[in-house]
Image (cartoon, rainbow, N blue to C red):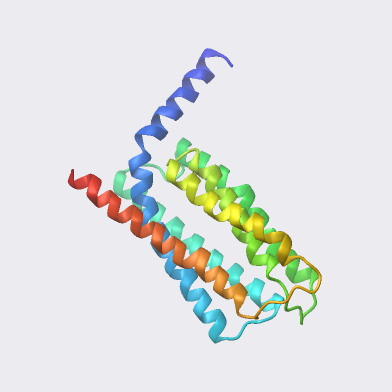
Length: 208
């Protein structure tokens, strides 16, 4: 690594450290919004009685796209408020860290739609894998934002990896609503709780 590259690398690290509070402020409303969307998605999925793999994957992929769009809008508004470019070098690193696992999750959903039959009902492994991949994405992004985000990602990835082998056993049976409940809990309620925690602690730090 030459001197110029080393200097740029140190500048990025310094910028990331300086913007930890900024990322924290932006993350709270993003978590609250996505948590509300995830919770509403679970309620709608159960109310509509979406109990087969094809409609389940299509429905939750649409919910995920809607949630990510909302997160991008909030990030855009935050950047305008602070007069910074949306895709600054630190922001690009966060996006790059998130993308591999999130893209793999989307590809998994599309693949399950193509490969499964229309009446497949035992698909609990799908939300569990999504949770694991999402946790990996958060953990990777946490290396460029806040340490709390890394722990939050591990709270997704580790339990999902532990449960996954059991959901893939032949003959495994689960109530049709359980995948929706899991999605609503992990992508809804947990987001709301984490967003509320960030919001409350940020208010306390600003007051001191």
